[in-house]
Length: 326
Figure 1 (cartoon, helix red, strand yellow):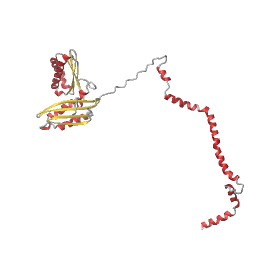
Figure 2 (cartoon, rainbow, N blue to C red):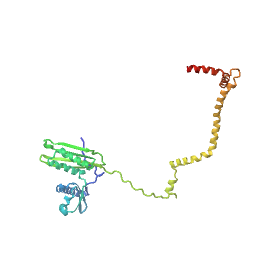
Figure 3 (tube, rainbow, N blue to C red):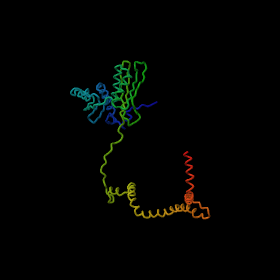
Figure 4 (cartoon, rainbow, N blue to C red):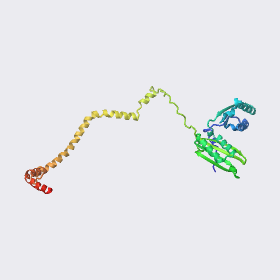
């Protein structure tokens, strides 16, 4: 079976802060906790139509600070601040301490999970089909800029005899990712055929995990053994500096070595010229050596053929050309 964990409690102390910011010893903790719970219930019932999504309490030795996150601050304040004054007087009478009320406006109520759940519950109380109410809320929240929304409804839906669970989701809701900023809210819709529980998850992105880059301050140069750090770093050889020095010094070095390098190929070219002489000698040796009577070099035969057969060649070529023409 899967174990469901409250998204706010799962990230409490890691990425999310507490809603009750106070500390008390063991003997005083229980009455202060019960007082805090009563105050929250009273505020939620009294400001039901004001769109209160979150209530934060902060205690000191003699004062109590309450911060209300609401989508309709005008309803909480009232005309000329009369509603806030009445609320403050009632809270002071209950707690017996000086109470300070702070109001913070929610600019995008579609991204608050508590307000999304209350909107779906209000539609169910007006007998609107639950599937239609869920789809409309999903569309509004996604248009407001959320990356994922999930709404679940549990109870006797549509007048059925058995309770069932219906849910729908848009986008992605990574519940197991700690850095994911997931807001969770739940409420109840009181209908004629029973109570229907409504839960909503809204994923708006990730918490900022990386700290902003700090501006680099001017590096101090403490002198160690009389040498500043900047000079030591400049004098230290680096692989890139050695490569640059090698490339710069390369063209200057070949100039003095150019003479021996030039002489070396001269010595090496000498054996390269010998094969040419041998080739010529091979062609010339058969002309000089055959003195026995087998002299038939190409040059001599061509010369003899041209000199001795001058009269015969034109006679033979003329009839052949004439025959070809005929």
